[in-house]
Picture 1 (cartoon, one colour):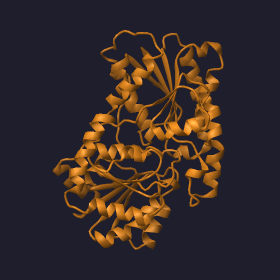
Picture 2 (spheres, helix red, strand yellow):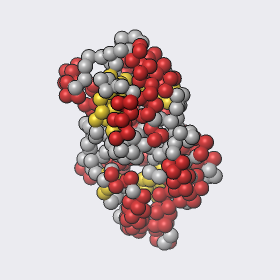
Picture 3 (cartoon, rainbow, N blue to C red):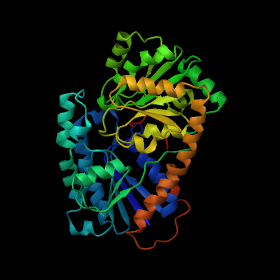
Picture 4 (cartoon, rainbow, N blue to C red):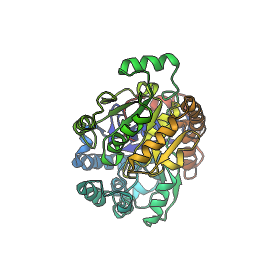
Length: 405
């Protein structure tokens, strides 16, 4: 079986979460189905802040999708989309009769916008653009009628059904590279803390974008309360400039008088960050875009780092009491309480980390996820010959850097 995967805004260097997901899935699928090829116009993370980038790359993706759909040597076409309405380019690619003769799957990685999911603290301009381009009507019209719509969580499935999508719908969870994201050794932990300029106290970690629904401002406002109970705690924030630049972050740290305790970094090597961390914090305030099912959640748990998250999107579907805590979104006080509770016993983070690692290996390793995707393919494709031994070489190289979550 030969599958072609297309993603319009594939970020070179894998600094963006969906790019990392596409990469991981293609690599894991190749040995299971025979041959996997990725087609997509490369993008930079900074360019994704411009809306015209999505339109220009969407048009290129449409041409790639049409070519794959009309290629007699291709058995399956798998279209990955970030903003759900971007699926419209696949729908346009299928207008020709010849392009509708083979299985076509849409993989919607992110949630679409619903006003009731977004707090008033989000700027009106951000809410307007997401309602216009990423609302349920645009998403439903754009996706059309693929052979199956694939989503990563029950939360998304519920969204799509409530928007009126009544076609085949498959829930297949996101995956993580458990070889790259693994528990650090004692020496790795010491070296990473030295490299990052961290002391011996507990280290809280946030890494990812600074989009307003990521809730980083709430984390900063919660930190003084955490310090009153854990005076040696440190907060490490590694961020990209996607969604918002970091200038406001440095100003906020100064305003709160936290310069001694908060370490700000840009794009960083994620395994180094995780090796230094005792607890990761996901303070998301709304299930918009990449905040629905953040890659960072799976990466932290795979590395044995327990997580304090919020009850947003599909985070509660993954984050269990034996390896994390859930706080109310948009509530710095509750975020601080849950973080302090997790740090309350000296051995608690390490015990929770081991439970987290077991859970990820069982449910979210890319090999597990790829088997489920291969089953979706086989429901629509006649029996194919055994996979090619060298098929795995078809995939993109793997890197580990800050990705969107």
